[in-house]
Length: 84
Image (cartoon, rainbow, N blue to C red):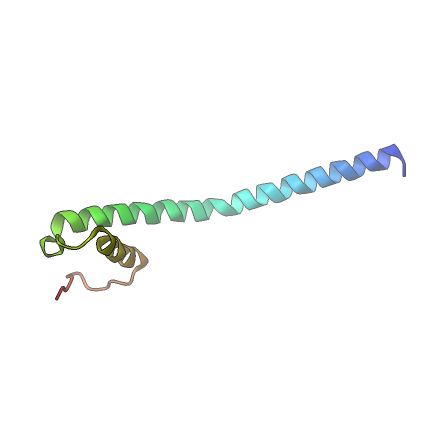
């Protein structure tokens, strides 16, 4: 195999690797935007629950975060929370 063919193979491998990495990076942009939105929702929901829901003050941090996860995932449909 000649030296010119080796250089072409290396060049094509480099170009295809670069294109693959750019494609992967571009496909991660929407996922990262969604994660930023969800994290913001979680943080704001926890702040709202801690500040406005007086009957949930005795709940632990894990329970409040669990409720906030359910709210951000869309599992809580009622505007008023019911507690026992």
